[in-house]
Image 1 (cartoon, rainbow, N blue to C red):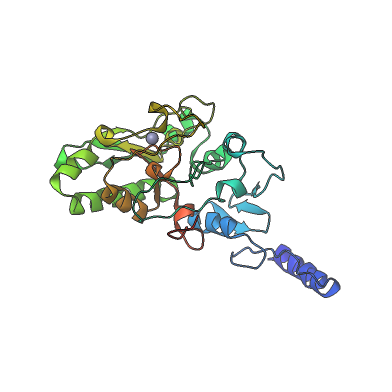
Image 2: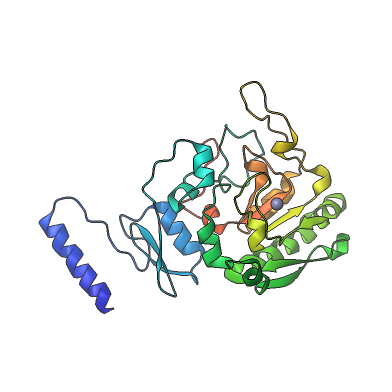
Length: 276
Ligand SMILES: [Zn+2]
């Protein structure tokens, strides 16, 4: 509290001395000068982050993660390769709407800063393995048990998804959703050196028989991929309800893929229908 009152004193002094508002420290969140995306990150993982400033996310155990690395990236590929938190939160995910072809390179959630996920879920195969818990998966429709990361509400959110899928899906869709092609797998994204979120056991692939993947297709003359989706939106909407994003809403689509990203599904960070 000492540090807090000292900071506050300094900020009040700055506010008197300078006409421009000073960036405010906000240990509780919600103070002016803190970008929306940073606030959503803080609020989505309350047991990991105990404070936020205008430029960083403060870890509860000490240390901070920077919001912006201050480097301009030339294009979307460069952002995917080497993003920061600000770029990770830049595109807004719109849940519950019908599936439509996203604009080129629009894929909220596909930009991921790996150190962030390592800090939250474990920084090696062995470290993540220690956090795995079993989640029964649609056993009434022929499914089995999957392993998911217990930290930060991930496994609990998957269990809530399972409960709703079991309750709400008609039998044919329940059988489709029951077939999982995997959760935990310490690996990179196909064809890249970037770490897949399956590495952290916070992603699940289900219903492969109706899935489509951008890289199974050839681009057109302009180098663009045509959107394809045969996946039932009912399943995606139930995942979205519990803090998961769906790979079917990405320009580089991966329609059987869901990952736990509650920061993208809370106000004021969610997108609006018709907007980006
Ligand atoms: Zn996947």
